[in-house]
Amino acid sequence: MNTDDSLTELRDVLRAFAAERQWEVFHTPKNLAMALSGEAGEVIEHFQWLTAEQSAALPDDTREAVALELADVLLYLVRLADVLEIDLAGAARRKLEINARRYPVEAARGRADKYDRL
Amino acid sequence: MNTDDSLTELRDVLRAFAAERQWEVFHTPKNLAMALSGEAGEVIEHFQWLTAEQSAALPDDTREAVALELADVLLYLVRLADVLEIDLAGAARRKLEINARRYPVEAARGRADKYDRL
Amino acid sequence: MNTDDSLTELRDVLRAFAAERQWEVFHTPKNLAMALSGEAGEVIEHFQWLTAEQSAALPDDTREAVALELADVLLYLVRLADVLEIDLAGAARRKLEINARRYPVEAARGRADKYDRL
Amino acid sequence: MNTDDSLTELRDVLRAFAAERQWEVFHTPKNLAMALSGEAGEVIEHFQWLTAEQSAALPDDTREAVALELADVLLYLVRLADVLEIDLAGAARRKLEINARRYPVEAARGRADKYDRL
Image 1 (cartoon, rainbow over the protein chains, first blue to last red):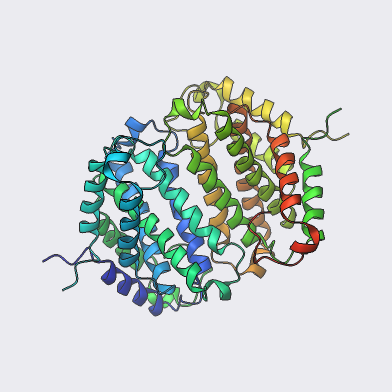
Image 2 (tube, rainbow over the protein chains, first blue to last red):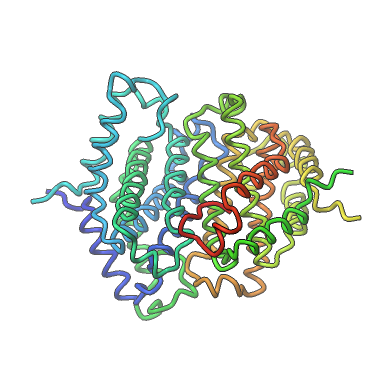
């Protein structure tokens, strides 16, 4: 069975990575929130001049560059949750339940006008 | 065994959630990159006036609010990777290998001066 | 003569505003950079589900909401430049000169493919 | 008299710059909102690992790099307001009036706890 996509394992790898390098002092929640936002900004820079259609048909080299930017976002996100002692997967489940109640299938179908969450 | 923290399962849940609501039309990579960035901005707003110390000792209600914002970032990140057909966990592994080479333990220990990635 | 659009006057107004409220302690460059990013995130949230065409034809109430978000970005930007003792208008002139050299009219006409700056 | 810090003049320069290069097609509000957010992300990356004290004492080369990033934010902000036909200086004045009412001097003095705007 594949456990390579586990958020918990990723958290543990990142925790060890930071500890080995004595980077915990830099990894305050405030600093990590900034790093997360900076990486999200790098993602957006790949898409800002593209049409919606172009954004869905990236050349291979751009797609790999974007993949590594998305990885950066994930790494900081997991690390930020860890230093805040937040169970990220659990928070995602809670948020999905909220979203399911907020956007019932019948009411939300095909509408973005009242839509402001995933 | 806990599989609740699987990125692949989360991807599948979000894919179904969007399909049921016929939201795929809104979920272009360009739009999802914007949503990701917007959510990262909401995370940062929680921390902008806090000291590093305050950011590490959030009151419970703020911490839960932040947890749900981090969940939003994760949901959009996973959805964005999905529509781009990027294996997010695989990209994270590739990025970790790059980081391990870029920041060898001895050279990187306790230094942020040359440090610009996780 | 209209001097209401002066960046220098705006800087002075904001400086006095912060001083009267004893907010200088919160207005570190780090915190203001976060606030700037957070406000840019609020701008983006207005546009994330819109098509390019919709983004150019906002309803009046949305347009006024966006105007106030753009104002927030400007206020934090001017304040951040001030605490860093950066002449924002001068920096803009330097950057325009750089851009004019980087994107000569003939080479840049109608092309976004190599285009990554204003 | 110095008019070099006029937002209106800057708007006109940028409008001509885009027109000469036939870039109007790329300058949709949606795209410019993304560019604004991307540049704000570049600003934040300069500060993310710094303490508040370090952020207030940048080395000269970093400070000039930050100055040019702030210029980028300003250029996209002014251009975005222009394509939306928003009077940026007027919006800033409206926002300042709102803030003055929201944060009366006596109540706001030295407090960030209820403070969420400039």
